[in-house]
Image (cartoon, rainbow, N blue to C red; front, top):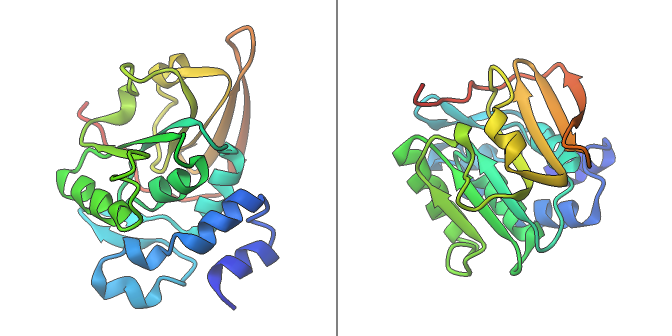
Length: 205
């Protein structure tokens, strides 16, 4: 069974727009040549420089928690291979925008080149930035959603400031995935989903 269909059958993929994105954006297009033949493997795979492309099950779970919508502006921290950026770009569509932050220059170029295969760069839907994403991106704030694909030691306070009311932040802290939803009073509703493994979020600090 194809990976996407198995993720649907096992209940990880539920939303029609996210399912469509997973079917269209092929994981093999975001892997180094040596690993493209095992793109359907439901596990993390190396993309170089000590980083990985996340396990598809985990990506599906995190994007379902994020609930991206057409036309939204999303910050994607630790974009790596560019796969999550491309999935989000497909979902937000031509009226949306995804800002992808990657601190490793070679990976930023790799992810940007991969996302360009789907013309997200040319259409201006996705923009890749080589910088430390732990401070967010105040120039383009506020954001509808913020996604991080590497584990932080704590939730960066700048992200909380840069998310809209009603917006969602999904990020790993340690071995748990955290969902934060910004309430009207500026506080956050927070849920924790333990039992995951991530590479650490690298920053300049």
